[in-house]
Image 1 (cartoon, rainbow, N blue to C red):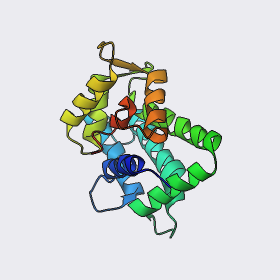
Image 2 (image 1 turned 120 degrees about the vertical axis):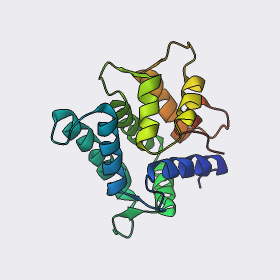
Image 3 (image 1 turned 60 degrees about the vertical axis):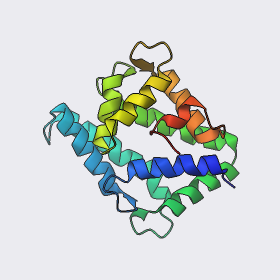
Image 4 (image 1 turned 90 degrees about the horizontal axis):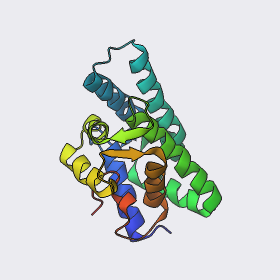
Length: 183
């Protein structure tokens, strides 16, 4: 069974991804986020950049969220998402870690819009903005994660925070704040 802290963190992640706040995470949420990111970056529909960001978002939906859709209605509710997380835990740590790393590599690649291998504070704020989340939460989260205060997060650091988010049940682990406060 998922701990209370894990349920709260995953509920926060679910709310983060429910772009239109209708109680479901759907492919359309991911597509709208991709359109939002493209618009924020000035990428026109049909451009290579636009197509790439859309493809990444659809791939994340297909790989990480669609498998949670138990009733196959094209919508994931929180209970389905939590059930998938619990199922992955039962499959064992090695399986779960592969999925977590794969997920956070995809998230990193989506946030690192210039492809330089680092996420800047501004890129992180755009990530939150594209999902319709207050960028002040991005600012606070980034400040917690940027220990050396250089305004950048390396890929390996971000992947470690992602692992902490999904694996660690301790309340004050830095990775808990990737999607804003969970409490």
